[in-house]
Length: 264
Image (tube, rainbow, N blue to C red; front, side, top):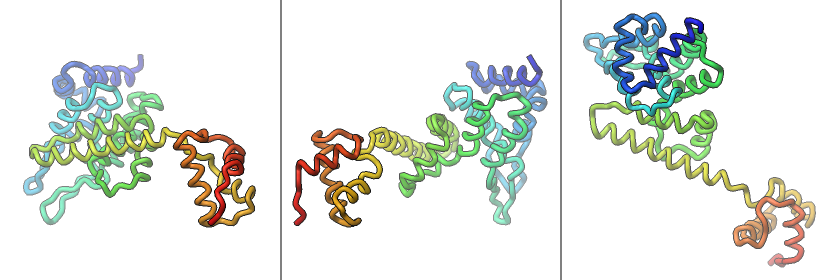
């Protein structure tokens, strides 16, 4: 076993073990975190600067790991999700601290440095990078998100979208109960919306693609309300079981011939 894979195995065992917080603290005390994951060590060493306070990112990271489900890629993403805050920390004149672009920077650090160093395989590398890159998106959700935006985010993560939702929940560590509740409600709303869209999308369309063109050619019609009305009749016939869903265009054209609906 190569040194890189040994490091990955030891770190994975710590993340997936019964006491991940204690195991990670021990690895840091032993200097192995600095050796194997200097990006996380740098995060642990990043302290607020005087008049520019921010949360202790090491303690936050440990809490996110503990709160995340015991799944390998999610635990790794929890450990790495904020490593991009080290190079992106900026102090504003107002006293505020910003970490703009830290999610994208963290994903790049993982892909360019950590994944090759520890020997992650391609599927794990892609999944962890996607989780790190998009971990903020779930708590940014609100009702203004279009169905298209939700579908696009879910499509980006593929079968890892549930992992992203779980990572988002784990990342809620505010000491203010109302802030925690608002964030958790947004994530729950996104999960409900995504599942409803997935259920809707799983149902095949009532009519085959391009049926309108077949209909116009068959009945010598031009685009307009008449075509829409005939397609509406066919959709209604599918919903009531008079016609099968997603059949060949000829099935629907024949049905219209057998069930004429004279134009008003």
